Image (cartoon, rainbow, N blue to C red; front, side):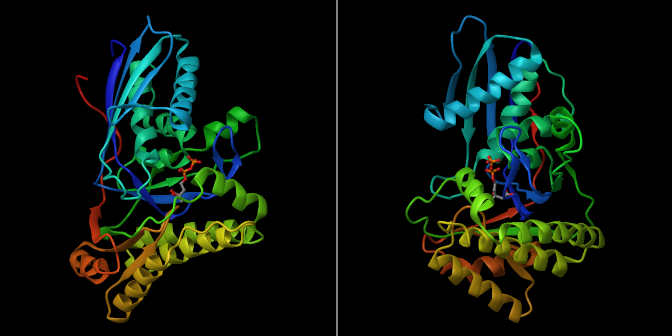
Length: 333
Ligand code: DP6
């Protein structure tokens, strides 16, 4: 690779959520999760090695990274360097196309693109499974963005050594019958900045009495979801998606102190989704670490769903995403 590589990755939205780690250092989750990779908002990341440099140089959308963002990228590069047996520092330039204020996390696409580009630049020669494991170490949800369409991230096992546990937790594509899905993203007012998801996750696991039951039922959700995806049973996929997300938010609300990401506008959108279903449109909501609502529906219904939620999204911003591609290296980069 000549010590340089460029990769592209897209964000993913979990239908069965990842919320809670059993190992914070290795980023091993408590439960399996399942997502759809989007066709919107790619992150493009270029990495090149600089043997002369005394430190890594990281820019995000043209600005030098600092604080926690820089610390996480440097820690990730240290991991790659250790595996490669190389000491060279790197120049990393990442361009993220998520519109500012859209409230869509970019850590999944960001670390998926960084994993692919850094592994190539440092000459690691990893396959997709190994890249998924590596991306996981940057941000758990990034493990799933290695793959297009639907992906499941295995929690893995704890029966052996730390290395065996690490090897057992990766994402892979999920077999799906053609359900022609879309995710309508209703961007609602972000309101005051709330607690970052990593800290919120920890607090939920440590203090919420609802956490264990949710984690257990999420395992059942995942098994039923896989069967419904394979059967092309869209309504069941949607029902499981919505209940799994509401259950996750219930565990957060029961944390001490409560973690609340849902806003009044979120609930207004949820009402619209319910009304759509009453009108016979299969539409189901899911929310992550913020107030925005992603509505799972069929592609053929996406415009109608977008119209139904538009005035409930105070910013007026409604986006329609379809299933997108996995992370990839740009040739000749
Ligand atoms: C609510 O993957 O951002 O989006 O592993 O701490 O980096 P870290 O967390 P992250 O958490 C994503 C949480 C979620 C649900 C999901 O994507 O599964």
